[in-house]
Length: 377
Image 1 (tube, one colour):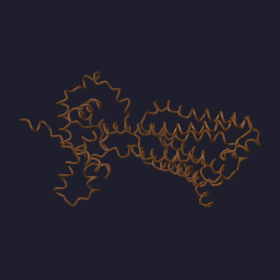
Image 2 (cartoon, one colour):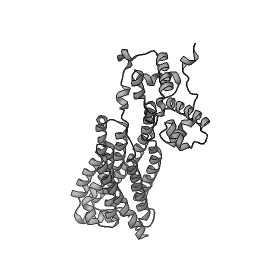
Image 3 (cartoon, one colour):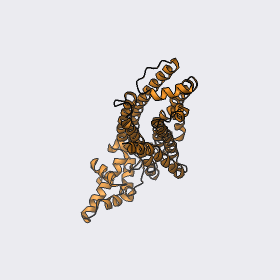
Image 4 (cartoon, helix red, strand yellow):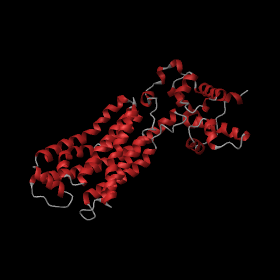
């Protein structure tokens, strides 16, 4: 059991460090990867400090205790800002760094209460006993103990607050992606939903074991196990960041476009819908996996916002569904002539980015729009 506990403690900080270095080397100008790199570096320190604490190296731990408090409070903000760096522009991202403020304040408060008010012997005594249920007599230690409880409550508050944000952000972002891209596989952050539920559950269990220590005093294995699980979730997020892509389109700036200011681009809805259908029937742009609404709008000669509105109002679907209707019709016709074609081949032939994109399109299938120009005399 001791060997397993040691393995969990060491891997908890070694792997985030390795991933952090790898991300910094490979990030180049990728802001999101750099933020994740710093987040993993923060995780490295958090779990390295845990390693020192669980080995009862209290002389060493007392010198980094306040920084440990701050960095623990920065775990969720780093994940949040990484997510925001994917869905927002760099200009909008600057205000989000205020999420680090609580950790900074609590870290500095700890420097005063723990670092300056307690003597060396009081620090060691507090660190040795604060999880054992001992009633402290020193007024200074009592203040530090109350501060610790407040810190834990703040962590619980963070878990609840960020779990709500991690539900809301993907939903809004997914709608924006579907309005712009025909394939959203590499841009989607829907994985955050399952990550959020699991990560929050493990976090709350860790807090419970940290506060109440349900097993015998010296048995910290289950707490170490839960803390290791938190580290493992952060590894997964770090590894996923290598694949995650950020859209080139600034959704907010697009949404601010006023079509009334583009009189030269305004076309009657019926004519624009006909032009769009004619373009799709003749040029078959839907066979290009990277087709997006901005490109289509430039070819047709209108702005992206107006074309999106026309697709929604005329055909009752977003751009993603609209394009995939044509792709599905194309592969259905292709299968009639080549019935032995594999699913992987159909993905490439039909312009789908992946098998999962193909399955998702089939689940959303509606009748494919037909050009009005062909049905009218």
